[in-house]
Image (cartoon, rainbow, N blue to C red; front, side, top):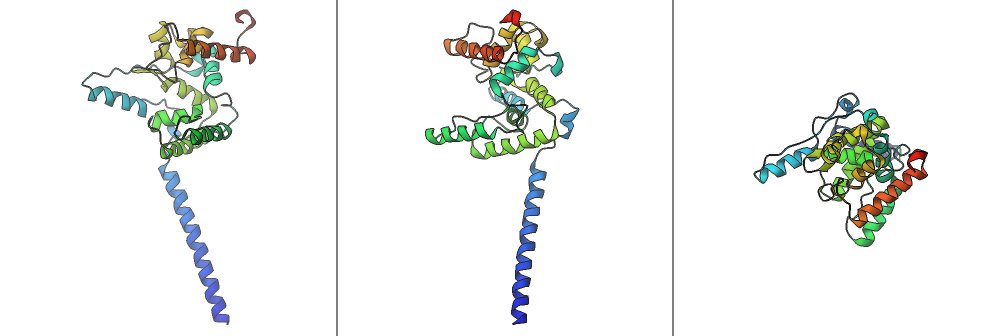
Length: 244
């Protein structure tokens, strides 16, 4: 009887040990799989996955890719641009931890009803993760990687640094990456000099940077979107009284 109990106890102990070892192995694999983002605390990324994909696409066509990106510190960008991006892309950026779970849940419900990946509910942090390390291709596996890397970025970097990286790497047209390059290309001025209307026009183009041209007369849908963003900025006190 005692021998049987000892055998059961030994098997239970071995099963627990095996489970702990498996969990430890999974955790180790998880941390090894995540990209090293420690350098981003002090070093600006020289390239991104989206830039590399753009260069490859142009080369395959037999063309000569021209990448325009001029790094600009966050404090040297127009405050209207920073606020417009938050209003349009991620209103709760400074309060969530890399992922807006409520918005993600809503997007998942919408996608299930539509039976396709129509909405992603990506935060600014998730977009940084995707631009730096992933690709535009939509799939559940890529979305999971995006979420995990976004959480990793949020743990490793402060919010202003994440926003600064985003505004310097996001794709704004054919070979145009970052706010400074976009401001010069579309408005012939530095990102620090953007007016509220110009800043919102740039942000309104982000969902379709190859199709929408911020410096041209916008289509009715984009024009309505610009109006909504400006109204949100007014409601939050982002525009001074003289510009309301």
